[in-house]
Amino acid sequence: MSIIIDGKAVSKKILEEIKLETENLQNKPCLAVIIAGNDAASKIYVNNKQKTAGYLGFESIVKELPEDISQNSLIEEVEKLNRDENVHAILVQLPLPAHIDSSKIIESIRPDKDVDCFHPYNTAKIALNMETTLFPCTPAGIMLLLKEYGISAEGKHAVIIGRSNIVGRPLSWLLLNNSATVTVCHSKTENLADFTKNADILISAAGKPEFVKKEMVKEGAVVIDVGITRDTDGKIKGDIDFERVKDKASYITPVPGGVGPMTICCLMKNTLELFKKYHLKT
Ligand code: NAP
Image (tube, rainbow, N blue to C red; front, side):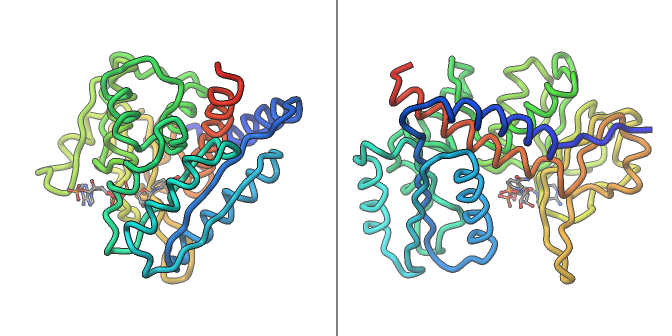
């Protein structure tokens, strides 16, 4: 019988702590979000971020830019926010329109306002296990879930499916920094199940609905599902075949209600952290 990891409850608890801390502040943290184009999912994500920021008493700014904005104009918008003394945290919603080089946009964000922690300066600090208090939101959320449920990564074999810059890669560093033995798999990995079957902690971030089957999971493994795919009927599906895998895992995250709520919670946590660093010079 496995324990279902309740990301919604953990996130709610952390958000309440943030709200309490924010209430006592004279100035409020300000999160600025840039969204370019008409991606429907991105609009929903940005709306949720703005709503959560409002709930916490944060200031928030959303800059909606047209699909055909040039790369230089987009960089100018980021630079305006870089210079704005009232903005503590900047997020550029991904994906950007195809003609824009996302890495150039991420590089244009001031590292000390980079709330997603995607700037090469911040990324390198994590990869090098240098002292830092900010981590990319989804990997940070996963580490918080493990901590909350008393699951130590030390000495465990952690297998990650996915090597993206926003999930798989930074998560591999965080797990390594926590003394796990880490294997990162991707679409070119041969015999994927040979790796997943040996995972004490299995994390899937491939975006392939229910592709991790029961036979691919070790008995008693901790299984974390990052995947979010919307079915044709509008239902959200994770990467893990939850109904069958749940009897084999010791702990498992559901989709929705697992990693998803933690991502937004860590975004708010990072916003507050940047505010404190910038405003209170901590
Ligand atoms: P991504 O950039 O598309 O990366 C997907 C990764 O999975 C790639 O590294 C890809 O390998 C690998 N992959 C794809 N098919 C595979 C297969 N059959 N076997 C092994 N590896 C495979 O996606 P992402 O941005 O990291 O997001 C991944 C999923 O997580 C998506 O469903 C996304 O919606 C979700 N997500 C959820 C949250 C949350 O808060 N819960 C946050 C971020 C993302 P290659 O590198 O070789 O192409």
